[in-house]
Length: 208
Image (cartoon, rainbow, N blue to C red; front, side):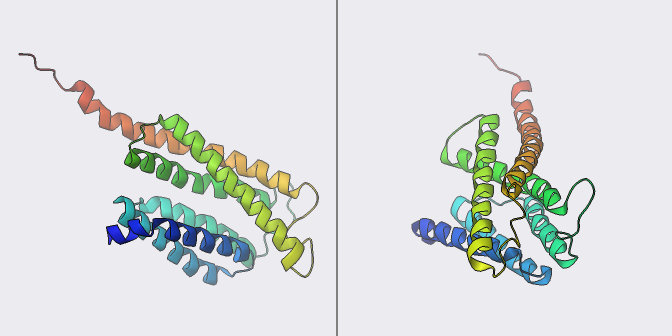
């Protein structure tokens, strides 16, 4: 199976990206009981691909964090939290901060693991920075999707873009969440690396 997946690696990745884009495009209109099985199937596909292609298992806790990010959006749609006005922070701002904080550790882990798999020994801090810039690019892409959806696909413009500062405010909250999630992932991975290196440092050196 590994050779077959390796041969079709690029088409599989393109298919996963296309499916993810379509899912993001429709996510705002899906009920949580619809988005949940789709999300689980998508995560299962990514887990299977990474395991078959790179002989690496994505930690289940990271996949749970990604699902929670989808669940937060679904709950907001279910209970009308996006249209409810709050005094200090709106639910849209809350999700745009928390969701990147939940998903950034996955990107950090994937970037760090795949770099090591390819033989590139980059410092963890540089890998974390690369992961944050990558997911910020994805967040910008999502805002483009949201803009296209609001302008061309929804019969009433303004359903997803609320005011001239909505996109900038969303990206600002995204960045705060990404930095927070990236720092948490960095600290955990750094502690794990130090724990693995400690026995090697403390091992006695035998001389002849």
